Image (cartoon, rainbow, N blue to C red; front, side):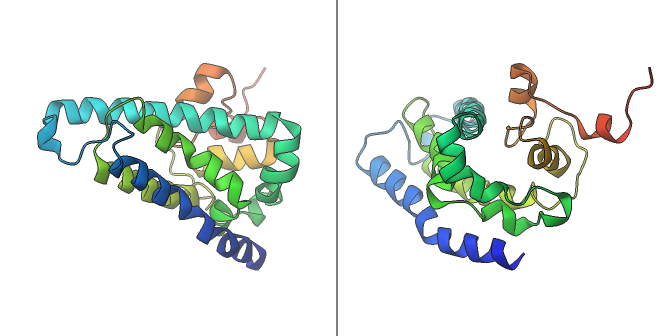
Length: 192
């Protein structure tokens, strides 16, 4: 756990770069972000939020999956995080113990989505904060068993198989792209 804390602390200053860059792009008017909900109204705010979250989930899924599938990216970036590959080596600190570029790449979908769908500025910043909290949560090995949430049970499987459960907040992308492995099925295998 000490190593996880040290890796996370070294990467933290770099993680702050993405929110700073995204704020600059928003304030410069380069994105489709809006300042107040009154600009679009509550119904459209929720529609845009839903689309934003789907795009972010899709982007994180594919970014995470490519960090596994493209061998140099795995070797030089993502392997730093996957040295914690057993349930007894995972902790919330492992959720932030990434190579700095790896952590930034996995959060980039939050920024890219701003160019595609309108998003409330404060909601975007809150989503980036929630990203860090959620990342710690899915590494704590406490599986809440709330479908379709990508809880720690799913993510622990990811750390032990390397080929399943790349999603972030939900299991939907893994289900759609055939990489879902359910912890309940691992705990209770089907009898033949």
